[in-house]
Length: 624
Image: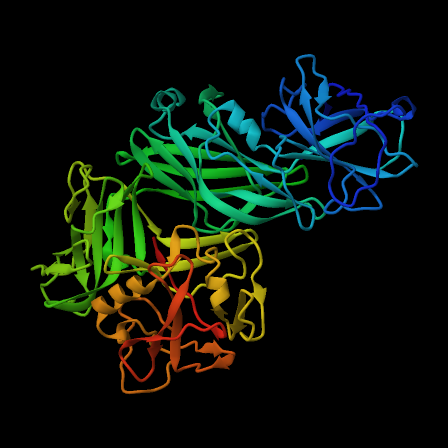
């Protein structure tokens, strides 16, 4: 589709600057001097390619107090090492003139320059390696200010020499717009839908990323969350319109929930049947056809995508959110824990596939815990299924954990529970009640984002502890700095890591930095390992079933801890297939490794070992 092109009112601003020096890093603009009148001032005009969105930067004018940031690079340099003008702020006045916070003149000597401007201005805008800018969209775009602040526009102009003529900057939208329309189907009218005032959420989209100026690409996606769109419903030719959101260009994978819809207290998921790409500078219009059917609502979606060149249409089936959980359909492929959410997104329960060990049970089970005051209530677990006893009437029991991690188990007297429901009071029931909630399941995983590096780990519950279900595999500290990659662990003075056959090993200096574990987690300390040892008694429930040297020990991995016999570094790599060895932190000394903890192929015990500077060991973290 050919997009119309409009110019914004001429942006005129004269900037005064003093003698210009050459810089070797991004710098402030110099102060004035007596030669000011001999210099050529910079003036700009600007235009914006207009899309279907209606943010403040689209139309005939910027609004007062809108601000853009300007970089000027001399062509003998590049953005990441030399900036003649570094993120200079220009603010739109009531008279539609842009006023700079610092004076600016063309460089002397006929230096050719490149101009880069962006909107909205951010005084903390960081130029990362490779000419990348950090960008973000607001999660709540319901007010106009947050909606406009989510837009991100870039203007470039190259080969600029000193001239009294204005430099023309054309701004392009780099984000993507998602627009929602509701078409009334059978049993509905536009007026009836408008009265219901449907609630819409954009589900689980990345809201932070890096934009590379040179390649015009986004990367380093992080912070997935729901987005509340902007606008108010109104009727336009029999269709409800008025809801839009600005999103970062990204791919939404097949079978993911894209849009959550609530009408008269009933919740519906709009899922994609194939991968869908939100492209930069694109306008994506989703039409949801709402029809009543058997007292419920069914929604179909048709999508038009306008990206200035082609139009694509897509139909997406959506389903209503169920009011039950089918226990037999739970497979726990991504984690040993599901988070249970009500239709409105509130946290109401947790479903754990966990190891239960007490005087009257030694088995893995599926346990549902309610939520009390926003936290999982571990004193009131309902046992829906005891694995290995499917043909016995021992299900439907109860588990309760005290603050010391001691388990009290009460066996049930029923067959395996097929369905569970959650009442509005937070009670777990096995038959439908008038006040049951609509329920959604989400795998409870640890998503560890470190700038451009993202790792996703399963989570396992063992007693009252929540562990990572895999060893840490980070190449950066949590502050984004790189960990030094080495071939061995023979340097005890430098924080390093080694990789061997896909396994990550860290030396003592790396774990002692205090910035290795993910946020909200810690490297397991001495007391954490001791609590684990006391509960399990036998390490066979920790060991992965494969990869260990053959011995007369049956590895069951009932806990889901998945300890693999990855070996270790003692200056050089050794003991693969024989040992899994982890760092253990001191209970009393902050950020100090006190010992190593070893699981061996030829023993069922959890053994303590040394802590030397030439060791490279695995790292396993536990939730704080």
